[in-house]
Image 1 (cartoon, rainbow, N blue to C red):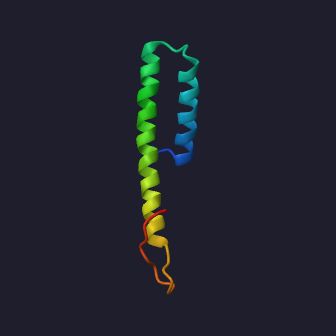
Image 2: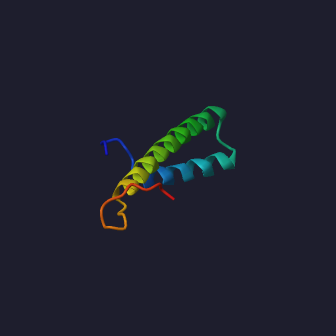
Image 3: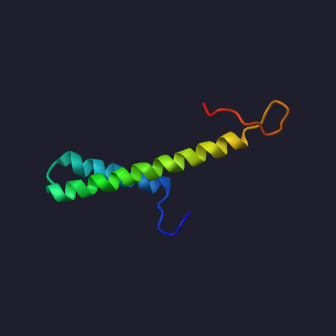
Length: 74
């Protein structure tokens, strides 16, 4: 993970904060747009992290003979 990257959990927590702020509806338009843009970027980052985790799980699953076997993620 790069120095400026957040963990999945940190990103998810920030997304929850953004949602709460936007749901209040009392932020000025410019601030709301900034929060929306930040949230969109966080969603992309979380999605990428989930995709990478899924690929690791697929690669690490073992087949019936104990050897690694690539299976679809369920």
